Every structure is written in C-alpha cells, then in structure tokens.
Length: 229
Image (cartoon, rainbow, N blue to C red; front, side, top):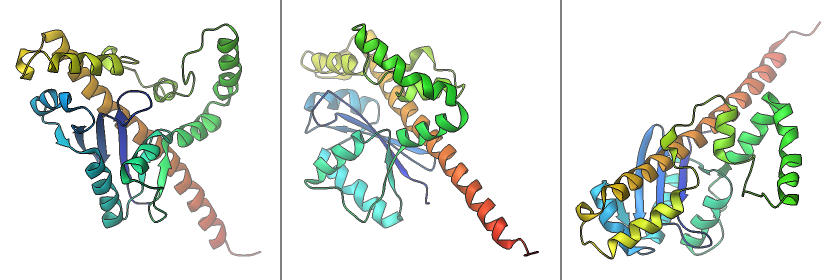
C-alpha cells in the first residue's frame, strides 16, 4: 500500500470542519476553511496556514489521492464523512479510505489484550454513573498512552473547540492577529500543534498495522517457498 494521505479535522460538533492537517510521507501542511469560518483567516495567515474553501480542499485531496494512487486515512470515519460531504456526494469507489482507529484497536487486541478487555466495562460503568466522557478508552490519545508515548502537557486535550471559539471571538474585535491577547495566540499555536500531533500519531498506528500485515505476508510467502517433504 502506498503511504496514505493522513487527514485530521478540527472544528465544532455537527458542522463542517474549520481546520485540517494533512500528512504525507513526513510532509505536513495545514489548511483553514475560510468559507466555513471567515474569522479564522487572520490567525491562519499569521501562522502560514493556507486559507481555502472547504469544497476545494476536498476536491484537491481526492485528486491527489488518484494522481499519486494513495489511500486517504483518518482517525475514525469522521474525516471520511466530511470529505464526502465536501465533495457533494458519496465516497468515491476508486479511492480507499483507511480508518486508523480500526488499526489502533487491532493493535491493542494483539499487544494489550488485557487493556482491550477493560474498555467496554469501563465505558458501561461511566455511563451508569453519569460520568461518561465521549470516546473514553478509544480516543487516539488513549492508544498513544498505551503505546508508551508521553503526551506533552501542551497537547490541549479536549480544549480545541473552546480555543477555536475564542480565536473567532477575537477576530471580531481585532483586524489583525497581532492585536489578539498573547494567551489567545499561545492557545491557537497549541491547537495547530495538537492537530500536527494527531496526524503523526494516527500515522503511527497505520504503520504498526501495515508492518504487521507485511510480516504476515512474508511468513506466507516463506511457507510457500518451503520444499515439500
């Protein structure tokens, strides 16, 4: 499989995303959708984030996947859903979508079966105790921690939506990003870093899954080459 185009969206619930990170073979780029939230433009341009229309982004993403014969990947089906919406129809049949969450779950079942067995009971217990937090146990950051990766303090876990809202509020008060309070500037940069990390971490689990597949393929091929008794 060719290296995928890894996409990670940031935004608000039940609406088109505001920001995207795209990672391909180590090259990372970010895009702000100024037709969705025009107010994001000042912060985006100050951080060298490309300002585009959401539909144009989705069309170019699909064109690149076809041109370079790459699958598109995201963590869960969220990215697939919104890319299809941006294209204005169903997901095209000639481009593969790879769900990194599915790869992460398969990795957890293989390498940490005891952790996999705990997830559903923990989720049920939290629901019954009215302590439910969305995605508990199956969030990307949960898998990252299980893999032994230290999550930095500035990861901005569960803070992205609030920061985006504050950035948009500032855009109505200040014409330029330079006029935003320093706390908002710092929070915006943490969101961009959060988005970058999510792309790289999602790719990490795709690498683990693909490596395992290659190992299985090599084992099968080796067995075929064994001479018969």
